[in-house]
Length: 215
Image 1 (cartoon, one colour):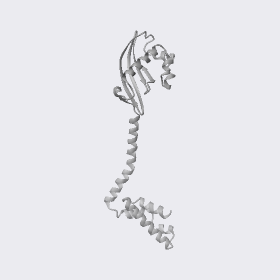
Image 2 (image 1 turned 135 degrees about the horizontal axis):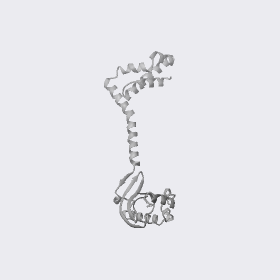
Image 3 (image 1 turned 60 degrees about the horizontal axis):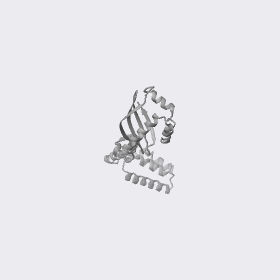
Image 4 (image 1 turned 90 degrees about the vertical axis):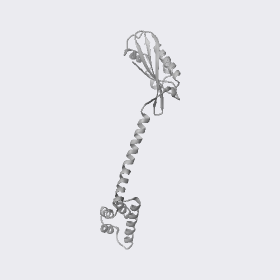
């Protein structure tokens, strides 16, 4: 162990302010270097001075209790502050990523009337089984789902025979915000001859078809 490591080891165990630590470390280094100049070996100097813990205990006996308490508080703050900041950052990240809804009438990305018109158009294309048109205006993840097989599975969960479409019902919609993504999500109940179907349709900022759920 060289003199700097020894001085640092002692100073690190002293319960005092940073300024006082620096002064003590400087004092120790000066004493050691002075003895070395007088011909003493570093190993002998450190052996006579004693272990770093004992030297630090000697200094701590002369440090005012108030200063030692302040040192303890500062040490706790050094440990807990990064943890608190990390938890805060994680909380903000979760809040940023967690989906939030907003009034679509106040949206900068969507027009309520346009969303309603596109929803009706999507349902008409589904009923007409025009999968090419649906895929043309869908996000990549949706294209593979827009086919006759998926449509048949979707319909069978409600009824094997929906019959002809009779009328569109009222539309309820919100803007869904997740991170940097903005989505329009609308629900509409459509009456068919034999069943009433509630569609939940999702569109991205470019009004591309991004999701469907029926019940």
